[in-house]
Length: 368
Ligand SMILES: *Cc1c(COP(=O)(O)O)cnc(C)c1O
Image (tube, rainbow, N blue to C red):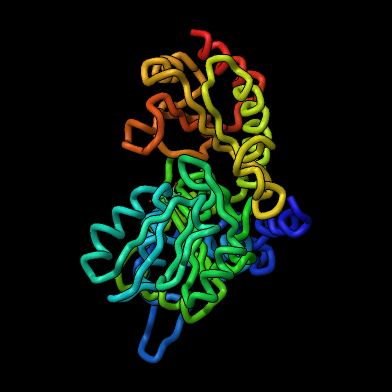
């Protein structure tokens, strides 16, 4: 963690301090009100909760500290992604999307944007560094990609995209603002599924958009108000609570992931392994610069689907579920969703279990 990131983590825990009066609660309130006292000629911070609520303001204060930018909270990662796409694109535009990224983003583009006259061009993440970006209005990237963990160079892609007249949006879900800062590297907008590590407890859907161009962020905010893609106050409060421990949880998750990846890489049952934190990994070139570390996701391949499913069932400390970034480690065979990966490929999201206990369980399940 850089000093800058460490200071953000500390300020995030105390962001309410300056606005507190004696007797105020240290934690923010959940305000369920939809409508606010507004007499004739009256002005207030809030009028109707589709446009803004006190609980969002508390959450967005934290998110803005983390991103060092304006932020708009959404009720899911996909709601944030849709807002960014609709804020940036119009009929006749071309958007470049990762062919190996989060698949729902691609389906949204092909099922809805194409019908409105937007052309979607798909590109593998590893090819972004060399591909011709000309003709695009928007270059959308996800690095490391999910689930393949391939990377591209955000700064270099953003420079080339800008030269070609395109805006740049980065899905930063797999890294979070603690581990990677796309806005500092030239992105116009960051989108993220806070459903993953920021929420962190598998009990909340949420997302956000961040950016420094206030005209563009005003369009994102308008999209939320006009489309009605709004986060409930209880969910906003839950994410606010989750964010307080994000830095602490990531620290444990990433340290453990590195240890487990090193051991899996030399395990005789493992046919192939991807973890950007290992020097032998093709994505390692971005670790230490663009990425603070290798993250908490590991992709590895066992002999076949049967062996992989037996391993997943045998390990007591792996939640057999989709999604990632929670306190509990979780894993699944991605081929079941049709990802272009081998049948025995497992995406493992390392949680906060004490690492030796977790490793012993994984090692025993691999032998089962
Ligand atoms: C989960 C995820 C999303 C979508 O988030 P939801 O909260 O499920 O809508 C988007 N991008 C990436 C990389 C994700 O992992």
